[in-house]
Amino acid sequence: MYSQINVKSNIKDYCVSFVTLEDINELTDEDCHLVIIDRNVANYFPRLSCGSAIIVDTSEELKTWEGLQIIFDQLISKKVNTLTKLIVIGGGVLQDAAGFCASVFCRGIEYILVPTTLLSQIDSCVGGKTSINYGSKKNILGTFYPPTEILICEDFLYSLSNEDFFSGFGELFKFDLLRNRIKESCINNVIKDRQLILPYIHNCLEYKVSILEIDEFDKKERKYLNFGHTFGHAFEITSKYKLSHGYAVVIGCLIALSISKNILNYNNNDYAIALDLATKILKNTVKIEKDWFDYENLIECVKSDKKNTGCINMVLIKNEKPIVQKIEDYSIIDKALKEVYESI
Ligand SMILES: NC(=O)c1ccc[n+]([C@@H]2O[C@H](COP(=O)([O-])OP(=O)(O)OC[C@H]3O[C@@H](n4cnc5c(N)ncnc54)[C@H](O)[C@@H]3O)[C@@H](O)[C@H]2O)c1
Image 1 (tube, protein in one colour):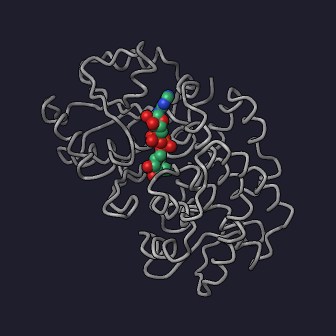
Image 2 (cartoon, rainbow, N blue to C red):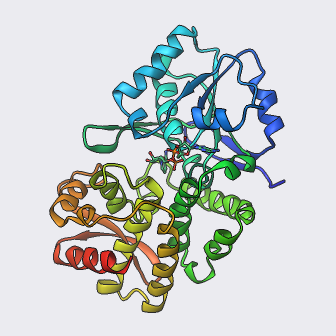
Image 3 (cartoon, rainbow, N blue to C red):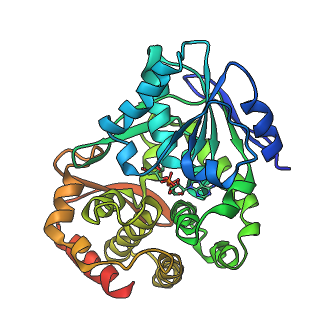
């Protein structure tokens, strides 16, 4: 079993533990706990005793006002109060939506997070961000509201479809690029054998926690974790969410890398390695459509992203380290979009 990771937070400290399905079962049996679970997880894990759980269908639709109403209505009908602790069992979508509800219901109720996708185990479970989409804007409403505890159980990873499993590689790919470790990436090995993933989950979480501890609220260093997300979020929108988050981040990372290569001398050889890994990951998702790369649409989405204020700031890589750079000459974006589309 892997060692516990302690997260120091300005809001409240919490920890990430590596547990078994039996441990989660024991927790779901407790009287003061109310389980909210992704329907797919509930179907795959009938052994989980969830009592009178709230079972929800998850898609980006859940991360909307209308989606939240489904959760709030159930919290009211199940007479949830400040003594209730929610146990949230699902991927990044349920985490974002249920975490948001927990943060505002009765001005805040406690929740334990059980992430069940690779993306949520390797990245989104730590950091305390909750969010929903509004109109065409991704993650525009949200709070910082960490869970009291995060429980990681690897059993969940083996029921994921290939598409949902490899989507988690988006954030792993991002971490490898940020840490200048693309040559030593584990991605090729884990593609061949999913069971090798656990030490990398532990390692990525430790890395993310080290950044959170110096910049929890996205003022400086945490912004670097946005690498690949400026265009990633835009691709989610232009593809009307056919491209799920992790794959959109992979393409967003390639755009940022191509620009870094063209204007900041990012190493050509490392770019080729990254491109090779990215194409292996992207094989597991839907066919990439040319429309999603429409320059005007993408620029509009990027400019109105919450991390931009009418101009375009991107995390790029210079001298093997991330930097935030304002892009003024958009022709370099156009060039990167063409280069990436033609090579994936
Ligand atoms: N809060 C953050 O810090 C943060 C960070 C990164 C991403 N996100 C958000 O996370 C979301 C993406 O999360 P995701 O990739 O986990 O997708 P997801 O939650 O939509 O899950 C993907 C699919 O897998 C299914 N599923 C979940 N667990 C399963 C299991 N164990 N077995 C079988 N099927 C299972 C779900 O029902 C769903 O169909 C995006 O909305 C993104 O914006 C949030």
